[in-house]
Length: 390
Image (cartoon, rainbow, N blue to C red):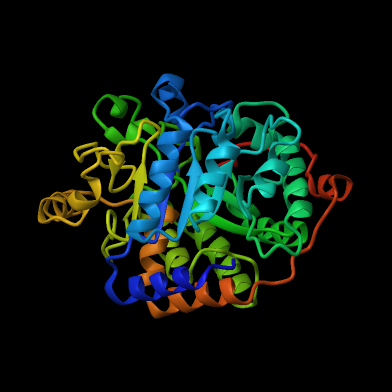
């Protein structure tokens, strides 16, 4: 992932001070064409609340002034926004590194090509299984595996020799633990990196009426394993899976996560405990909602002035903001969101920082794979979509 010299300088400053917001997430829309079992954000999609291109341009310029190096444009499904490509170009034109987070399903012809033409070199595409039937079950959409993987082959061809870092986002759950090593091998074969995110779920069906986080996650017990009384057999499954993927990473496998984050994920899946190392939400990273609302992270309720407010930059540097931010972070039970927690590990630990720096500075020459080759990885044999209890 090639950055301009200013980007590297900001990353170095962030490593020393942890006060430069090098990473931002912009949810361009909450609309989505899928209703994945562990996600509820699609219920809040409202096109009328989304920003105009002029407003997005103002946001891009403000992010650049604040020190942002990379912005991830997500959703919902960002391609549900009719002007995603033009919005991405506005960020690229300010010198920011842009990543588009997409499910890769239902994309109209030419839209990926237009993003790349406008300077987008990084895409993350969701894929949680090599069994099409299992992935379609998770996405609640027949054919989602085939469409997502076909999109990956297009991205891998478009970005070959571009210096981009296409990535598979894989949610780790009870459904796919045994598949993780093969997911790494598939990512390498198709010319992608892979990022693993342990599943987070609501604890009971009624939690949604009390929990702000219910905007994003749902109650799906068949996908969960993170309880204090997890049987030894499940703990063993987690350890076996994470032993293998950590070994693959150490051997040079294309795993984007830092080793400290993978170890924290292992612990979370076995015990339900979040990392205790601290959180840098609002300082190293922040989030902007489709309507321009600023939050330190996804989990916190809106209590700051809008990111588009003329006084935002002064507010962001003020003691008032820092006081609110510390109260938010101090009162949060924690999370495992890789874009937040792994960013902290990358800047709080030497291991995480140098692993990421090495991957960015010395990327592997990517492979590319056509659709005929890629679909050969599909596992079509009959399986129990939800693994049986041991």
